[in-house]
Amino acid sequence: MNESIFGRQSIARVLVAAVQAVAPALITVVSLHLVTTQVADEPFAQIYTALAAVAGALALLLLQPGRYGSSQLVFDRTTLVLGTLARWAALLGILFAIGYATKSSGEYSRKIVLVWAVLTPVLLVASELAFYKLARHLQISAADTRKAVFAGCNEVSLALAHRLAASPETKIEPVGFFDDRSIDRLGVETHVRLLGKLPDLASHVKSRGVDMIFVALPMRHIQRVIDLLDDLRDTTASIYYLPDIFVYDLIQARTAEIVGMPVVAMCETPFYGYRGVVKRCTDVVTAGGALLLLSPLLLVIALLVKCTSRGPVIFRQRRYGLDGEQINVYKFRSMTVTEDGEQIVQARRGDSRLTRVGGFLRRWSLDELPQLVNVLQGRMSLVGPRPHAIAHNEEYRKLIKGYMVRHKVRPGITGLAQVNGCRGETSKLEEMRARVEFDIEYLRRWSPELDLQILWRTFLMIFKANEKAY
Image (tube, rainbow, N blue to C red):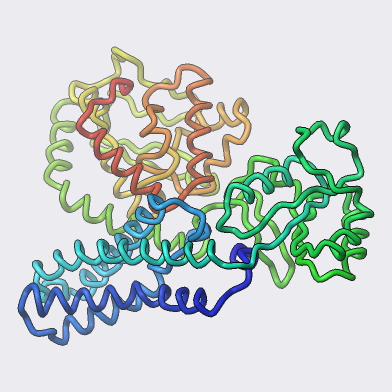
């Protein structure tokens, strides 16, 4: 629906969209050919032809513009760049996984692959920015501004009118509102233009050449909506309904259909469809690579844990995972106890239960490294809400509204809450509530580029001890 209300399509805009759709695949293939033949001065052998074919096909699937729900005409350039880089990283991850599975990665020149992997996203970003600028120019310069009126003056319609007025690229001009209440009863600012009452809407639309009507009547007044739609049948205006459910705090709200019936998702996981595939592939490739690189460190930590205190090296604790199902989360044991019952006491400063190396591991978050195995198992993700012990879940779900919503996605090794300072002990209810607010904000705002930002900030935090971890 987003594209249909941006004005009438011109031949130029259709051609630009068509070229933009195939450009990522062309850039991916051509850049590989140029790097191989011009930079490395090698023939474009059969193995590189095969790589070009697979990479080009993946580019058609993963590198399409606007794949994350925002119109390419209204999001900012930073989002565009980060989104392109995130999708390219996912494509590389899939290629490396294919190469590892087929044992063919060793046949390729590391120099060619490295230069291609670095050069291509630069070309992709430059291409996206060029198309973005061209599409925006064509949209703004088009002489097809459409007039819009609103049936119902309320928080929803006022918000949309304000956004349309602030976004000239939409080519939609808010003209005014129709409501059976007066300005005084509405309690809105005096500059809001009230054009008449609802029964006057149809005649106004026909006489003033209105192109679009946004119906923003509350759902409880459904009969009024039906009557209004019946009156508007004699007009040629496009009609859109704005459900008042959007005044509430929704998570991943979107429109869809089930067996032909329209539905509105009010609280949904962000990882539906291809999004889930991209995130899972990224998790597997990154976690697998990290385990290989960190295996010497993991072995050293395991030996230190084993030699300095009695008990198992790996501590398993039951926690809630995706959809609230119980999972076992792995950690290097940092205490003399392995609590996993109905009551669990959080670690505190100077806690006597900490082992000789346990405090160091917790301070630098090294005790969390075994959770990379949880990621490969599919029980966790690299980025997501941190899982809490079941005992704490059962306690806080009764105290914090919407607490269990955070389980709409797999829990993560790191998350938005952690990179914003919500780490360590939660001795106060406000501290846990702040964590949950960040977790729900992550669900609401998720995108591949947000995951990249969180991972980057987590990487920077590695070099700074966690003062809140005891």
